[in-house]
Amino acid sequence: MADINCKLLVIGAGPGGYVCAIKAAQLGVDTVIVESEAFGGTCLNVGCIPSKALIHAADEFYKIAAGSNGNELGIEVSAPRINLAKTIDWKNGIVGRLNGGVEGLLKKAGVNVVQGRADFLDGKTVRVSGAGGSKTIAAENVVIATGSKPVELPSLPFSEQVLSSTEALALQQVPGTLAVVGGGYIGLEIGIAYAKLGARVIVVEAANSILPQYDSDLTKPVVNSLAQLGIELMTATRANGMTEEGLVVEAADGEIKTIAADKVLVTIGRSPRTGGCSLEELSLTMEGPFIQTDNKCQTSMRGVYAIGDVTGEPMLAHRAMAQGQMVAELVAGQNRVWDKVCIPAVCFTDPEIVTAGLSPAEAIEAGHEITVGQFPFQANGRAMTMESSSGFVRVVANKSDGVLLGVQAVGQGVSELSSAFAIALEMGACAEDIEATIHAHPTLSEGFAEACMQVTGSALHI
Figure (cartoon, rainbow, N blue to C red):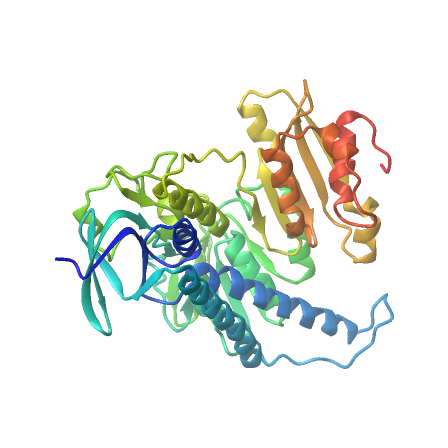
């Protein structure tokens, strides 16, 4: 006999899990959520939120430091110092408030919150072990939302000197030299922040370029910014391990070097948390390390769903949230399928990169005959007044009818345009629709309209 019986059991209170639980409870579903660590998962505790807090603090420090040398704006200040321990305390305060907010929302919605580690006994039953002992929960439906964890290199096991992103976001002092293994968005976001705080940063990337998921037009402004910050790029280079002298790396031509680094940050990707909860008891169909699901997030076992990072790329919090909401509606008896046109993605480097929908190359590969419109921020008044005129907005449209297939942008603050791009794609807008929509002046969003004007052949400001 189970200690708790419910209609829906959610395992994991990260972005996908807690949204699923709250939505289900709002729809009248008897819901239990189990979490072994802190509410909010990786994103809130050791990922998205902490990294953006550090990035903001680094940006503010960098601006003040620039003023100590005088600048074109006429702002002059004394040379600043960074108390990183205090910065981390501020970051932790934000995380704590958001933790409490998630827990409060769950309880307000009527979700039964259980702290502890869940282990499957079968497809309908789990045993939860925690500080207060163990209890058994039986559910009609189960959602696996256990998230992901940093990938560890066998040659660079995590230690006091070799860090994952989790430890890098909790340092109490700025390292003199930080070597970043992996030139993806996580490594670059954190590396740029520490470079702005005064660290010497070296990025080691095995591929021939950083941010290999983006085309060179989008990454070029970031590469230029890295150079301005004094960040050294070592592409086509592999990290082989650590010695007492430092990080050993090997270039494509076989040359071996040693980088003397105070800290080494390893950011080569994330792997799903599919171990540790006796998932093998379910014998689910897998796709590599990920749980295979259909367009309703249903696994190969009836009544068992999986959402978020455990189901594969893209590993984005907002994807998990949308999946969680859909599953809650399905359990409540509604008819839903996963049919999103796009999942916008943001790289919070300096400058930022936004992608939504298809790139030009992806659209062509998919068989579309396309027209591409692009508007540079160097012709945008708002960008110029922000001293951030590098970058652009680019739209990819179907040549025959102008329907938008994708939108990309690179520039300071373009993350806030991501929703506008996604809305346009989800609603099937064409370039003329965006062109005909009045965009406030002066704003970066005007670049979206101007790029669409390029598609229709009616460009005004270029």
